[in-house]
Structure formats: C-alpha cells, structure tokens
Image 1: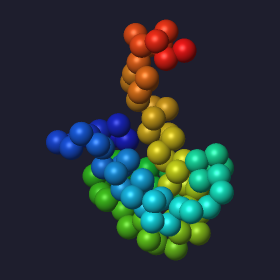
Image 2: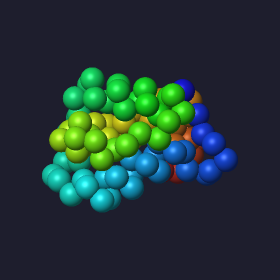
Image 3: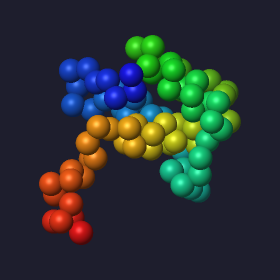
Image 4: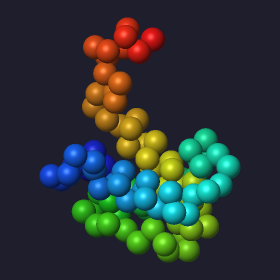
Length: 92
C-alpha cells in the first residue's frame, strides 16, 4: 500500500523520491508536469512491494516526472489531507 509507513516519521516513498528529485530533478515543471502513467504505476508497484526501487534506472532518469507524479499521488491518497479539515479555516 502506497500510504504504508515504517517507523520513520517520513514515509520511505517520499524520502526516496524527494532525495532523487533534489539530486536529478533540476528541470522545469518537475511537479507540474506528469510522468508517463505506466512508469508511475511501475514505480508505485515497486514501493508497494516493500522494495526501495533503484531510481537511477534509465526508465526513471528519462522520465523524471514520474517520480514527482508519484509524490503527488501519495499526498492525494492520504486518508486525511496534509492540511487537515479542522485547520482549513485557519489556512484560508
């Protein structure tokens, strides 16, 4: 499950993806542009299988936007929003 976390306060999927993006993702629109759907699903499956995928594979280097897309997908699928419903009024 993509939202599964371990003992860490930062889920492995976010930790791995953000480190990779910081190192390799100096491109315009890294979070604005979407990656190729099949690459996103492949990457998601690897994380869901309790593996830490090798993000330096050509498939991910050539489609770096799939890594950013997986981060966005993670936040979309959280059971409660990161900015909680209870705090919505204060944020807006």
